[in-house]
Length: 252
Image 1 (tube, rainbow, N blue to C red):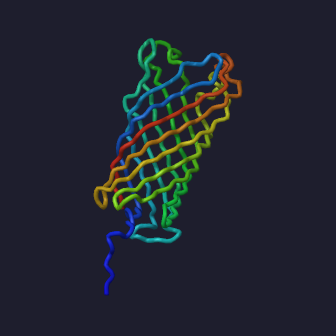
Image 2 (image 1 turned 90 degrees about the vertical axis):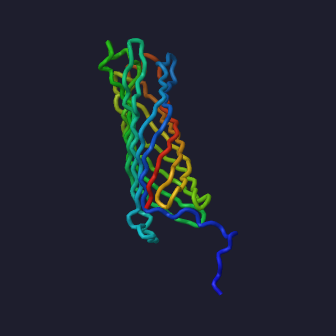
Image 3 (image 1 turned 30 degrees about the vertical axis):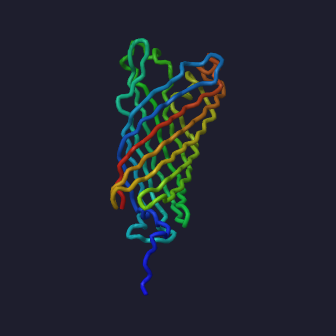
């Protein structure tokens, strides 16, 4: 007799994708605070952004399995819209955003998918001071990060239509741009971490919604050789981002 599928059998969950491309929006808060005897002004900005992200496993198309099918690429781009910061003499537009690209290796198990990654990431928070009477009216340093981010993620099927995921990355900062110049805060030891969690909800075989929350924290430990660090007794700083994203994704 042909065996019938029992309704009580465990769900196989959403299919394993070979590629996914997402576009949507992001809303968040960025803050820059200091450990200092005479702290510089605290920076805190709310922002909305456009977000694009994608991943592809070229050898997994057609449902192929095996070790090579786990090799992939992933990328992400995010850019704020209409962000500015108020100063006594007016407003200064802010260019805030990031992009990353990196490799992935996906290990599929009966319980979860484990995803190992290594990304090159660039991220910035840069003010346009050209409209200010005095550029020094905006008392916050520009930051342009370049970093390498090893990361690990897990994906678990919750139902046939829903999977949940989490990801953690270590931010190995190679460069921070103007904030570490000698007339600013000088040399520092800089490291950070990045956390993300969320859910993928499938509407159809190809179309789905991704909801994700993220938090990153980058810490500076200054060495005291910068003019601003010495003048204000700045020993360290913390650059934090928190936000929520909603994107529509097409899967293959």
